[in-house]
Length: 468
Image: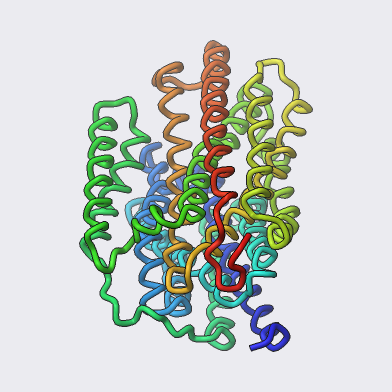
C-alpha cells in the first residue's frame, strides 16, 4: 500500500489517538486541583486523598505491561476500544461516587482503562505510520499529552469552581466516546501475529506484586514498612526476571532487553529521566506558594510555561527524529534538562520568579526534545509483533519513574524536615531539602546521558530502515 493511499487512515488515526492521549494527563492534573473539594465533600483524611491519586497511578503501572502484551495477542484496536469504554464508565461512576472509598475504587478502574489506552496508542501509531514520518506522528500525540497536562489545572479549576469536582470526570466522557466512535468506524482491525500464543498470567501476577511493592514501598521510605515493601519489590522483581527468562510466551520479553540494545537503553533512559524530573513541578509549586506567597492560580500561571513549550516543540522534535538519529536528539534534550536542574539546584529563599521562568522554558524545550524522539526510538526498534509490549514498556517506565521521583522527594523531606508542616520557622530546612533533592536529580540525569548516548552506535531493528 502506497503512502498516498494511507493518508486518510493516518489522519483519522492521529485524531483518534490524540483525543485519547489527552484523557489521562488531563484527569491526572485536574484531579490534583480537585482534591481539596473532594476532601471537603467527603470529610476525607489526607491519606485518603493521597489514595485518590495513588490508586490511579498504581493501577496504571500494574496493568500497562500486561495489557501491552494482550494487545499484541488479541489486537491493538480491541484493547484500545475497551480502554475507552472502561475509562468512560469509570469516569461516570467517579463523578457520582457516594463516598471516598467508592471514588478510590473507581479510580483503580479508571487507571485500568488508562492503561489499556496507553498500552495500545503507540502500537497503533507505529503500525499505521511508516518510519520516515513516524516521529512527527508520535510528536503530535505526545503534544496532546502535554496539552492535557496544561489544560488540567486551568480548565479543571474553572469546572470545579463552576460545577463542582464531579465535572472534571464528566468532562472526559465525551472525548472518550468520540474517540471510541471514530475508532469503531475508521480504524483498521489489526491482524495480530500472536493469536495462538497464550497469555502469561503467572508472570503478570509476579510483575504486579513487584510493581506495587516497589512503588508503594518507595513512597513510605525511610519507615520500616517502606523498607520491607521495597525489599519485597526487589526480590519479586528478581523472581520475575528469572521466571520470564524460562517462559516460551513471557508477558515481558526479557531477551528483548538483553538483545535489543536500543530498546533497552531507551527504556532505561526514560525511567531515569522521569525519576529525575517529575517532582520538580511539585517542588516549584511549594516554593512559589510557601516561600514567594503566590496563590494557586498565580502559581499555575507560572508552572504552565513548561507544558506549553512541551506541547509546542514535541511535534517539531518528533519530525526532527525522522531525519536525525532519534537517540542524538533525545540526548540533546537530556542536556537541556540537566542544565535546568543544575541551575535550579542553586535556588534560595530570595530567588525571584524571573530566576524560575527561564528554567521552566529550558525544561519545556528539553522534555520536548527528549520525549518524542525517545519514544520513536523505542517503537522503531522492535518488530510488529512486539508493538504492544513496547508501548506498554514506555508507559510503565514513565509511571514507575514518576512515582520514584515523588518517593525520593518524600524520603529526603522526611529526613530533613521531619513529619511537620511547612511554615516560616522551617523555610531554611525546606530550601535545604529542595536543593538536596535537585542535586540528587541532577546526578541521576547524568546517568541518563550515558544510557541515552550508549544506544546511538547500535543499528535500529526496523523493517523500513535497517541502518541508522
